[in-house]
Length: 460
Image (cartoon, rainbow, N blue to C red; front, top):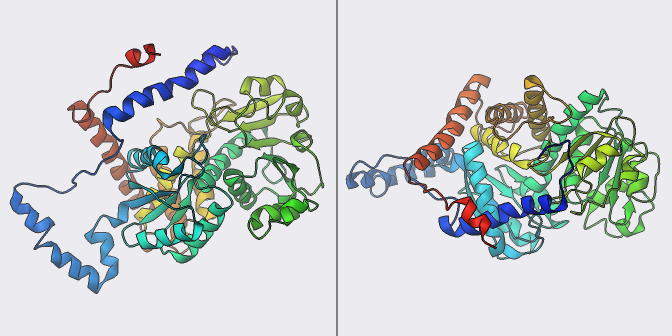
């Protein structure tokens, strides 16, 4: 869609509906998106005596004597559990674990194709945060990492913090850390283009859910002054006088901490008030094009940057933001410039931590990954309409994996220490294997071609 012309409402609706129409036809056609395939040779049935009984007992005894052997005797080194209770599915809300399963399968697909990670969708029949934490503890012996997904706030914060304490494998909440990683990459390059410094930039954070809570934490750790952050929830700007948030500080201490430690100017009021004089707006709130108005953007500083990342509809259309004075815009959509896409983060980050058998994923690893994403884009060239890597630039994934692995080693949480070259060769080999295997299965018809798009889209 040409950036120079505003699309009509009908064009936007048709484009928005297209993936859904195709999904309803394609999902039942394939009856799921991922499967388990052998990775060892099966020359004759006699090989089962090696892979299963009686030969497998030798590997079992080896692991019993030395538990670390599980990472070399089994595929645990590459297993990730995608764990969800379906209470906060993107764009759908609280739809439950069964309805959330297609999303978790999709996550597993991206893990495999972009990161070479064997991920398993696990949708839990509980909403209780302590039971979810316990389930993760029960799963730990099988997996090398856990990806928490689509869990409602504020319990998602507690679950992440507790599982990170209790488990000796990496636990990651993509709605928090994944969004924060890619947001950081976009902010780094956007600021370079407009010639502003991270330490001096004033940022309005619209929406204080899982995504923006961690984004604010990561941005602060990456160099943004806490006082230069102004956060806004559905009731207005966060400040020490917000008694409603103070009353909930035990359930959500992170939000109360923002009230106390951000917003050095002491601003109160609405989204419009928060944007006055701001260099950057990072929105992850309500999917509606009228959450942020053109008059609000017009109040921002010169060369303003607007990330409107609600899906599927951004808080303001990018062309409206630009007409109001924004120099750089970004959204969560693939059909507009500068997509802030979590898929640029989690597959490679897990590739990196799995390759060194890290015990956790820290915010500094997210920062290392975000900086590598930004560096990759800068090296191949950035401009106002292209500030982060694109999904098809597959070389970014092993680079990001290496950056995250090296940070794991630096922080002393890696069980295995490899050189930069060894990490690069390993990541490239595993990721290319996943991509090439998929291409080979498609070429040979083992993954059949789907029904023609034209037929599906033609039907009402």
